[in-house]
Length: 268
Image (cartoon, rainbow, N blue to C red):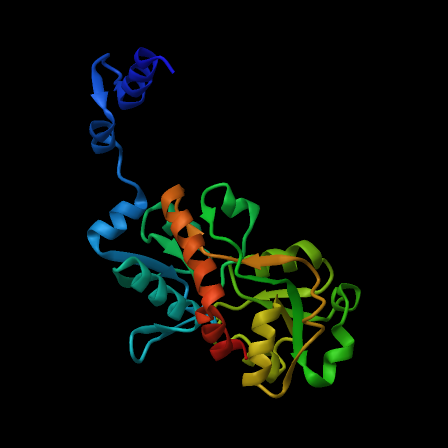
């Protein structure tokens, strides 16, 4: 190849023109690039993690200790270690999740968050960690009475939902004749079924499996064949660098067994 041509290519690759028309080298250009969310988190040394804290086993806020516990709490701590930063949990709620996200109250949202298109309009999601869907949980003696939406959506049937999340949206979209009652405390909501104040709740199949372990009176109805399709993931800011890091971290811990160890601790 002509030596002059080679020299020209080298110069073209190492020099760029900035918006003012001045020439700048590649290192200079890198210095002026805007920092990413990933850069910001690493520089500050803190990862702020938003969690409603009322959705066992994904996330639970223990008022006695003031600490967050659960599967996603453990996962967040593991991510913090991978980033080399401290994890700081931020209390949010399902009804305020997206408002707090848009206000910048936290860097990422966890705690059993389902991927929805409405949320995806405003945020990124990590790669999905779990596939499931909505299914009923009721007293074991009523298990055969509420197997289909047709059986559930009848006058006199009492459905309890927690406010502001996908459970309430699913119930209101699919139930017209039955009574839907909003109960504000997701930590004690299943007691409403046990007491007889509600007939059932329709929630994520993973939660029904966990709750039937805690309450032998309750049975999950066909958790392997839920009414709809859903996936759980982490709510992320619109920052490609941070999303790529989280996705790569999830891939690594799935391959090295760390994810399965944390999963088995809560889901068996």
